[in-house]
Amino acid sequence: MESMAITNNVTELIFTGLFQDPEVQRACFVVFLPVYLATVVGNGLIVLTVNVSKSLRSPMYFFLSYLSLVEITYSSTVVPKFMTDLLAKIKTISLEGCVAQIFFFHFFGVTEILLLVVMAYDRYVAICKPLQYMNIMSRQLCHVLVAGSWLGGFFHSIIQILITVQLPFCGPNVIDHYFCDLQPLFKLACTDTFVEGVIVLANSGLIALCSFLILVSSYIIILVNLRNHSAEGRRKALSTCASHITVVLLFFGPAIFLYMRPSSTFTEDKLVAVFYTVVTPMLNPIIYTLRNAEVKIAMRRLWGKKNLGME
Image (cartoon, rainbow, N blue to C red; front, side):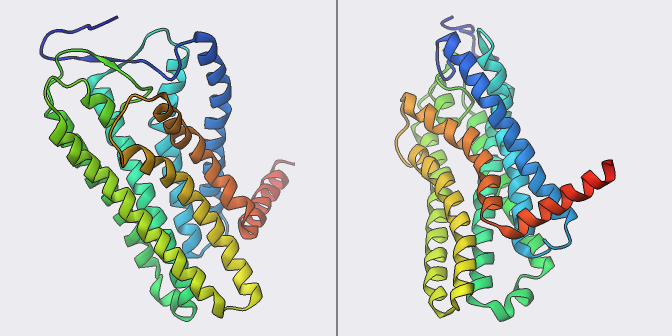
């Protein structure tokens, strides 16, 4: 299974996968299938609840519904293929399919990062400038911020892809990963990819690091400002911010670990990738709904109506 194409164009790539043992792979399938279904159903429920409920009309929920939508798409770029590969003997993907996977994975990943920054800005305005909140966070600005997040993700991905498609692939076609990402793919190019690697690292790493620093500083400013609030106001704001901060740490911890250091073929890299491609998207709806009474009440109302309609 060494190399399929010694010609100048590799058309198909083979993943080594997460584990080699078929039994372990089947066990992973049994574990990851309900996790992925929970991701789609949980985030889908948030999108549905926010769009149907009259009580969830504030900008915070508008952004939350888009974050949930991005979580579904982000997870779906990797997990369904990964799941089917767990049951396959040889895990293959076309070179075009690989490039498409990289594009959408980075597109939705960076869109999510930018949405998290937007949500932090929303919380900053709500807590530090409560009287001007509705004027500042107008419907128009909310739409612009969401569109900006999608555009930012798109431009980031286009840069990554333009660098990747210029590389020649003529030799080994075995990717040491369970999905297509830039560093594992670069290792297969028949040319020195040091410069491309640095550009890609700067593109991904700087977005992650700058966004993370903006998020941390905005939450520090929010926490400092909370001292001027009443005990009840402080408790509510802290509860909301705690869920935001948890999601930020879950998302950025692994991303910074992987992209802000030299590439390697460590198995732990793959396990960390499992965490942010499979596990984190499922945790977001749990974190946001468990800590938010308004979302829980709206969901109960929604299901109450549905059940009444069925009877």
